[in-house]
Image (cartoon, rainbow, N blue to C red):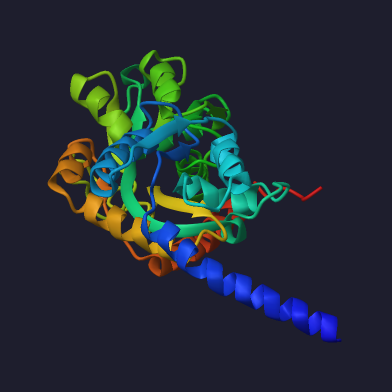
Length: 327
């Protein structure tokens, strides 16, 4: 018992001696470049938001924030990499709505999005826009519904990957309108939209940032946006709700996250810098012109938002019959 007490005392002394050094290390964070990993390729809305944020964080915190694209598995490759990283604040994740979707859609994953990652702050949100190739010959959501119902199982739709917001937006559309369409998944919105423009896949719920340039050029026909309010980047475009699908509300959001166990001092420092970044004129200008709205939040607010999104998408996945059994 005496030996145990001596060991406990020694451990307490060592911790007390190290405390100032640990506190100083957190105060001086970051002292080297920080990686921000995201699960989608360059050009995707996630990438656009991440690069604008990283540039501003580099200015605010005095170290380079480097974007690393790891597309695949609906963002799960990137999430898995960050979960395994050291919780020292030097490897971060640009989490997306896809992560909350996969909590239900992919129960076989060897990590828990809610438990293995620490929310830092929401960054931005962007509505999806229902677009079609001009050759489809439809100009409204009602016309598209009528066409798909006349050709059950014959019309394909593209998405940026299984479990992504574009995919689930389409699945919700199918459920609410009673449609039979075939899913064609891609690794990211950029690749998907390329095939829609080419007419190889005629329909897609695309992030506004990806779709708007092609809508303006006439390469794609926009039918509706997926958020309750019209998007500032396309104020004349009706919402899905206005087109008759009451309560339809989907979109893409992005938020900065760290491995679970990252010191609170680092989380708070990153949250403060992120909120300053998304309020900056530079980030607002860079994102708003592409249809991306900046948000910002505390870590606690972001955690609550993640919980609400997880519940919402679980209901959509169940209604669409996409539930998977954990092996």
